[in-house]
Length: 432
Image 1 (spheres, rainbow, N blue to C red):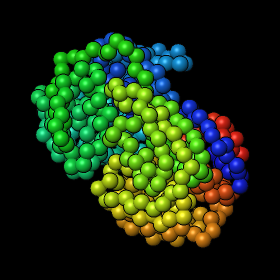
Image 2: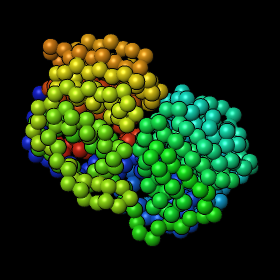
Image 3: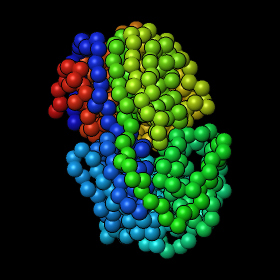
């Protein structure tokens, strides 16, 4: 899908951006836990993106019934040992979260499974998940998708220190730990997002936590909570419009945004840049949410410390572009993980910056970007990476240039209402 952003557009001074979708990370995890519980769980604001709908389709392939009313989905759990073998491979599409969490879950089943995905997924390394699972006793014959997982074995509890911060690896091991013959303990060198741990507690799964350490004790079974679950709106999606609003000096408001302390590093970085952002808590249950309001701001440069990169990994593309569009240099190191995301994100960020006229020096684990004297009209291929597609659109609207962006169909994987939100802001664009 080819999107052209027309130049020199005005945007409303105030806006209530209430169409931010549900959190992708929580939606994936919640679908899996609901499937494994006894009883039915109704979920409001479940993210209906390609990625998360693939996860719903996969649990249905595994024998779980799902009812969709259009406003909510209800997952009818089959219990911890109620999944059944799929007759066909399980296709996660473009979702790294889904393939890694499912690998942990399916490694513990009595049946065999094959998990695959799109071309991007098939190129992404899975050894960081498969190797500790093999230590637990799993039988997995590949380190790249398609992953063939042999069932029937029993898993051992493991005491494991993550070699790099990864919520996906941590979560995969916790899901496998539900079936192990003893406790599984995960140590984190840098604490990363904790949605899995919060949801385990919400479902009554035995979980103990200490600083940088989490232990799951395998339950006999667990029961779905009676009350419906409402997924918070996704901060990682909202941040694109927050960045645009700050760059264009707008007073925009966002409702029910998830502000989990392990997920808000991108928001905190915008504030460190000088963004005037007010946050009013709206819930403090399983996942905290807040109403977030922007005020006209002047953005400055704010360095990204190497130890902060792990908790900014999804936001680095838009933070790089925000810094550049504000007229400041952007520098980052310790970010080699970005080379194995939906695209080689260091390379695709560099290409976008160069298309805008910036000078870029690329490093194995980072970038140095100097802003141009004048931003250029540009044409750009996002390499089917949703975060780069949205970053490119923000860059065009922030700088007033004309932009032609290839690969924007990828935005559906995480943010299906993105263009509807552009429409509420009266953005002029064409789609071919």
